[in-house]
Length: 195
Image (cartoon, rainbow, N blue to C red):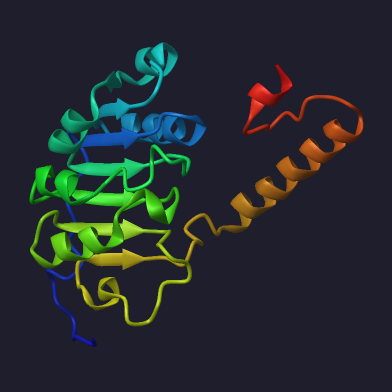
């Protein structure tokens, strides 16, 4: 919907001093934590395992899921899709979030119960959602999320910069060359297979 200039349009929340909740402290979650530290954010995380190195580096604190959801001003999801993480965020968790909080999902669409999210956002809690992934993908044109003013959607392209895509291609080549040489790929996402 077109609007004329408005000095209050697109004013967001300050991140300095805000609490960032990270669900999934793998490589991506850790990269997000490092960046958040630079903005002076308080960092909480939940993960299957403790991450003492990133805790020492960023001041991140490992907490249980409910504490993460309740205390986060920005809750960002970096989880693989598994039977345990499907609908990791559902109606219960959304109701626990601060009314001013934002949910960010760049992991996999089914990690969030999308119907529950649409209902919660329509009711104004949480304040909004930024989604690079949906369930299903592509999102159907009649999905309720598309009609909500407090939703930012990217069609699974939030990482689309020339530098990022170039680096992704380089990493794929590095992995391929290592595998062809009988070595462990340097950018392996499932290193347990090489144990």
